Image (cartoon, rainbow, N blue to C red):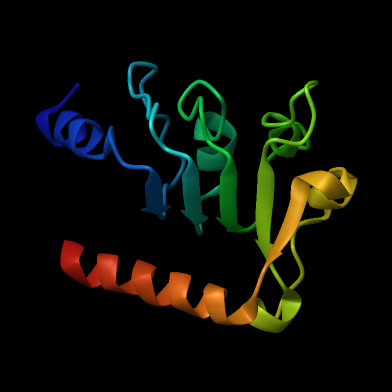
Length: 138
């Protein structure tokens, strides 16, 4: 693993809320795991990035995913976090009023108890935070 990727993994390993913008079709190595992440904000990930990386292996204890992206890439992705023990997890989706578009149709098949909609004001704050991160990275 290259140094920058190792630094990223080490630095964010302990974070309880991860905001990860713009993962293209990159596949994270299997040794990158975020055991302390309880909330994950996925912002404009490529559908292959979602398919390869959004799973219980990389995020074993995630309880909420703020999903601000397009297609999850495969119909199985939204179901990876659903547990037979019942709804201890929430997909948090923006409302169409916030984004001007509807969430991806795959989420229509997710049971309602696993879905929650992000209020418009919270959505605006998340996007503002993500934009600030992007400016810091330049």
